[in-house]
Image (cartoon, rainbow, N blue to C red; front, side):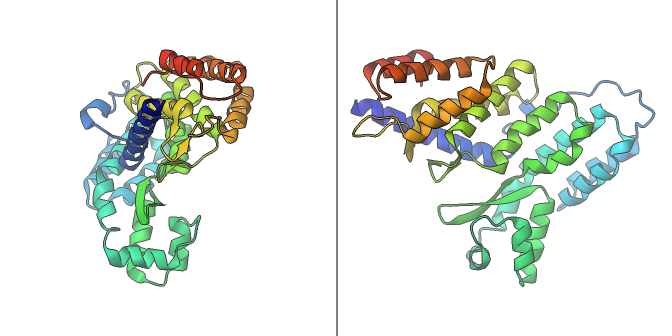
Length: 311
């Protein structure tokens, strides 16, 4: 049993690390693998090569993300859906590519202290911009927000991640596939699943995110963003059935299932109803096995996980 616990904890640690990497990397883990596929030939009279060229030019400029984002939004009515989709994906890639450079500006001790002096739980970049009297800090926070990032805190540090809510304003001019993709990513960036190795959302939310990610993969099996969504799904899946490093699914001593998980998963299964997917089927069967064993980690429960959600 101790070996099982160690394995689960090791897996949870790996899942936490992967989730942090996915969130901080924003959109792209491998540029070659995630480059947008060519858009269908545009025949719409609104096609404007000049708009596209100007947008790409702004993306290449140092500090040009705010201008590129604003320019794309201002010219939506001059672009086809295919063009807007490709441009939004280019914007996502640029946000990811420039994240590390932007993060470096937050790392000096003086900057961390300046933020810490005014930061209160729940603060956003916008609220900090309104609070601070420090012109240098205000400029950095404003540039960062307008570039498509949001502020997070963990382990005593302030850092940034891609803010997928920024893509909401383009949603009416995106393909269904990419609109749904941004929804999956926005759920994570709006409220991250993990914080300091612990589950930071409700178990019902965890299950709903996993189900949504799996649905995307089923609906768009050849999506150019399969890798990103698959990565998130795998993490959600592991945490669902094995727990997180600092939020174990079962008590180490009593082996009893965490009560919040029991009620949260039941709530999720009720809301998901007859959702079609292996994840929901596995979760439903998992809860049935647990019910038969007083919601405790028994040999039968371990066997179910090994057979259906191997790690």
